[in-house]
Image (cartoon, rainbow, N blue to C red; front, side, top):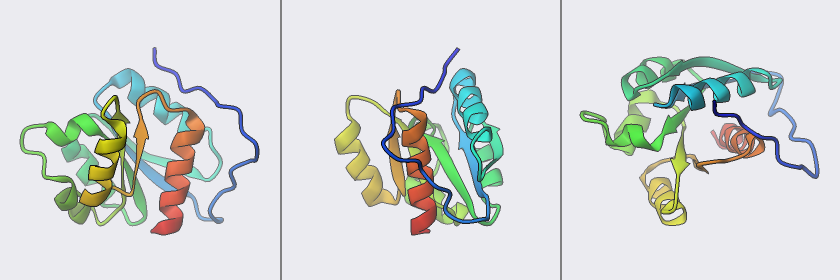
Length: 140
């Protein structure tokens, strides 16, 4: 079963404000989706709005005002999936793309140009997810 690990931190990451951050998780792997959901649900100031395994479910869930979408990069390649800029417009919410592997830095730059608010590599620590979520919330 997939688990998120805590990396050593120098300082604590504070919540953005008193309002909780709503996150929708769209990841194909049930194990990764479940581990991410459990880890984020334990974090103060974060509410997991939903956890789904396809981009259509992500669109339905991500339409909630103020929701940040965590999107598996593989879902962008699914049949019928809109390109990232169109997906972000449909949602009206920031998209953090997950699961960048060896093509990481080049793909991350391309995704940022296409409208991704942030990206998180495969095997990231919980702190990396939290940093991406909180920095995206601050920028939104």
